[in-house]
Image (cartoon, rainbow, N blue to C red; front, side):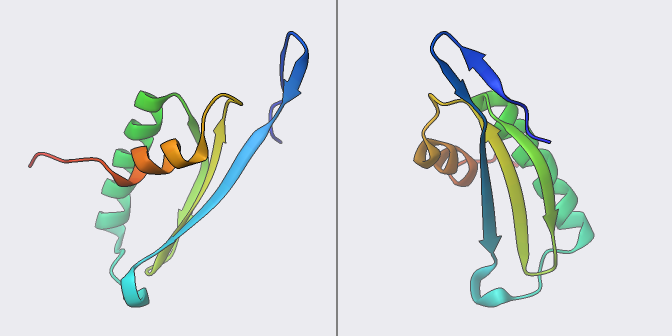
Length: 88
């Protein structure tokens, strides 16, 4: 169940369901890749102040259920999730 937050003069509960598909729906999200992807996405969420409530997927797509505050803008969340530069 989603948590309801209250402030002075407002009440909110914001959840976004995001589905990402692999290009051409190729089946490339093996268990190793999916586990690493989970680590990266949870770290990004923690650094940017939103929560990934659920994460599930298959070989060609991934589902995210994201909870955020009313001050956070969904394009900024997507930019954070998709635009990370990793150093190997």
